[in-house]
Length: 204
Image (tube, rainbow, N blue to C red):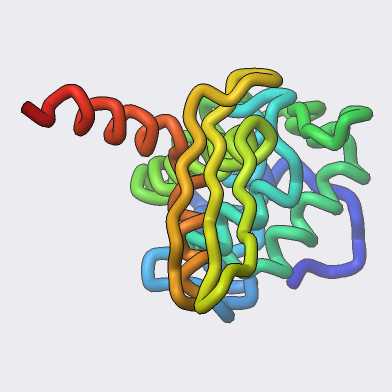
């Protein structure tokens, strides 16, 4: 992990030909797949890139969860990076917990983007979009797991504000099955709704 100095300097957010962060290996690698980020500087760069891409719409926990899921960077390195950059003013934490880009120490976001591998940028964006969508779905749609004789009823609500326009109930034998169905539903309840409706109208 980085040292105890909370200040983020220019070199940690911008590179030149003689100082390539991809050639530094100073970050923890536990939980990181091949091709993931191995330097503190590239983790800083990626966090800035994500914050700039989702300006005012993403929280620290979501960034950490996305990079954990993609195995793109070590969990503790990401959390440390976010904390240091908030303290240094590189990124700002808003009242609702979302993050915005602050002072990037003279490194335009376009140059920060170019210093990151395309595969890492694309994967991090994909997972962040998925997690943000899931968070919205969880706020807007509800799933109940109710114990029943011989198993569990999973009751899924597809809602629009205060009204349900579909309620789907499935019986399963175990709590593990119920939790899997709940999680799959919340990944994309709109897709579940559209599939059910299409199946009804296609059934001739």
